[in-house]
Image (cartoon, rainbow, N blue to C red; front, side, top):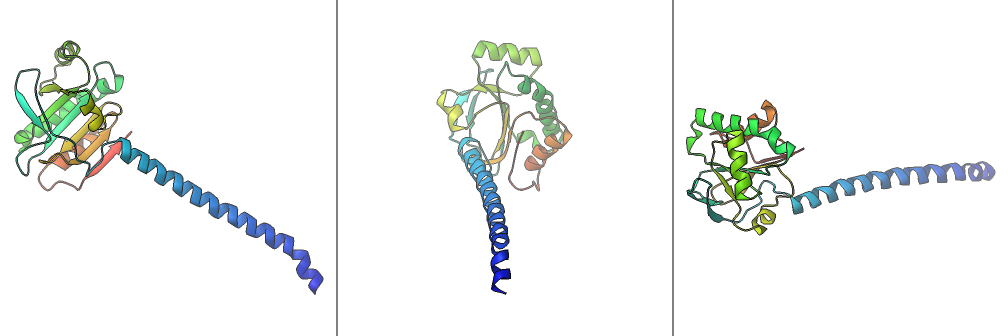
Length: 197
């Protein structure tokens, strides 16, 4: 009897070792996913993140205050570069969003483009692509870091005190992406959301 028990001990030990490896692999995967989320929240804008307020003038010469609006109002920001293919892909969607906001009650929702490039390059880009919403630049380069602009395009919706309520990193293409952003802005809007590609 004892011989039979001893004979099966290596199999039991092997099964226990396999089970331990599986448990450790699952825990390792969970930790990697959590670490990636933590890294992303440390480097990217996300719902609930508060951006610093700044004032500047648009390319048209109008003064604007970003991250500071009357209570209950939102601001939509499209951060872009003039040489990126992904920004070019997103222009059509940004134009559609602006048109849809104008078709809704949302004329009072200001939409701003923020270029990361020089003023001359930005002016050429605006004319070339027919951008009709106000375009500005960060008055200080460090603001791009404080807004967590790690790459472009970046689409943000801010509430009146500069809290991000919607963030989208990467190209904004397709009607589903547009509808997601519009639903954040419309009355009865959905809760805070974030997407990235």
